[in-house]
Length: 609
Image 1 (cartoon, helix red, strand yellow):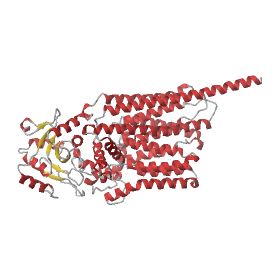
Image 2 (tube, rainbow, N blue to C red):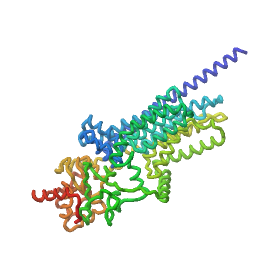
Image 3 (cartoon, helix red, strand yellow):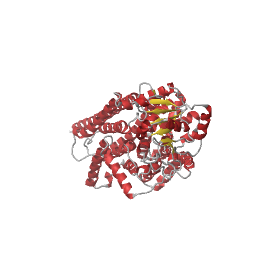
């Protein structure tokens, strides 16, 4: 009888050990497989869009010149954060790429940042998996888990793939959003690791450093740092245990972030960590700005420039309206690259009605934008399941150990809801919300669960990975062709071949969003513009010489139009390669006129002709 009991016990132990080994093996295979897929998709994304650059990317490339030209003041910009352009500048300083390879180099850098984001995500996922296993051990009922760990890992990688390729659009987009995601994942992982007393002090120091460095990546991580520190204090529980390590974390955060705060405050003339929130609130919530919607908030309406602007654009000519925007900094497109300068004087006014409308528009976007919608639905469903579980048990023990990351995950999108929401802004916050919900949904039940329990997370994770792959394949195919960046490279190259040298100033007739891209590749600076909606007025003017003189007074060496000139106006215009862009070179008639025009160009006030 005793031998039978011993034999039965040995079999149970062997079966249990075999089951654990199988689970560990499956988890390892899932991690390796998902890692290979994600890296492969990133390689395809970076290569297929190697010549693509978005409008924001031009501003970061202009800032990156600080490391090459030693213009360190360029890195202190009240709108654009310095970490990403510093990384671009470092890569440029090491490799010295030609104009053709400047943008592909940035995409190669984005791939490296992607690897860092993937590593930080895996660090966070390991913390969540540790909680899943811990909760399983604490609530052991002798039954198998409702959902095996490898299924949650597959779902986690699927969520990461969609948030990265479908929402952040990395490594395609030339923005710091992937850097932001990296720091959010690191901060969240460190937050969960604070439960372990043996490494708490060290992890608090790392958390303070990561929070401070994250502020250099994007301004929103400055207020979010206080959220993480507050949650960490509550997480530790006892103020006696929390005060020393968190005080050190706060001190390190202040030391790391102080240089940028001081430089930013000196730049804007008041205490400030960034002006991006104030200006965007004025533009998106208060709806202040000029009447030229396509030109941006700085271009005045017909009645003139807003009186509150300290640096209004100069209007050099009417019908068509020619705007001039030189400034102390030499940038590709000044109104975009230094929005704080041109928006100086803009006041923020709280309007309850406009604030409610802004929040409503953001909430609508969560369930209307196809890039955000999948994660929004999963958050709603996961939140409902978690709420039902917590209500049904009515026990404090059911509160998940992953609750700390739910707080910053919710606060981040709420901050964006106050002003403006884009998928790439909220992607990392949505991901940590879903990861934080895993331990609640994964709790064991009171009845046996078979393999069917893993169907939902496996299916959702697989679908998200496949959809991410299809999205990258779509980019790999080169669609849409107009956005793959090659046309801007051809325009920039042809402009140099037409006689406009790098470093010279030009005027444009058309859209600045496209104009700043080929201008950067050509190495020229845009100093004057006729907006796209005013192009018909330009082509219909009886004598364009007056318009050309206005461009010359702004210092322009040439004028580039994004539209093919009418047959009766094509004289003097030269086509740029095989594109639809045309250039008109501007030449003063003699040296006397050149001196006169130069003296007019530096005059502070100009009269409209």
